[in-house]
Every structure is written in C-alpha cells, then in structure tokens.
Image 1 (tube, rainbow, N blue to C red):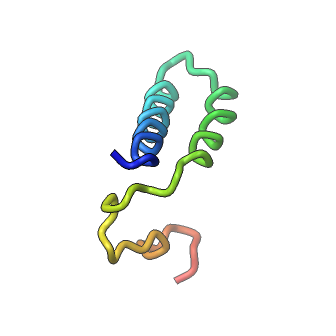
Image 2: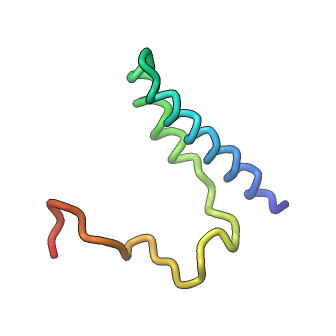
Length: 68
C-alpha cells in the first residue's frame, strides 16, 4: 500500500465515524464543529486511481444561490 493510502483511508473512516456520531441524539456539536474541519484539512492527496483521470472537482452541478 502506498504511504499516503493508509493515512487517506484512516482519515476518511474517521470523518465517516464523526458524521455518524453527529446523527446521534446527544452528540456534542461543539466537538463536531472543532474536529470535523481539522480532520478534513488533514486529508492527504487522494491515492492514485481514487478518481478517474478526467475528474475535475470544480466541475459539477450549479447549486442554489450560485451563478449560472
């Protein structure tokens, strides 16, 4: 496994676990607001092959409130 693959996978799992925790009835929202952005910022570059070669993260649907 490539050196960053394990870190990427582990961080994605932790983000998923945090999302699940956020859906519980007594979740600590302050904790979620503090940890979520930190985890997201710590994501390394995705391992090669995660996305197709033509993938552009800036190309997608227009969301409500965004320009045409």
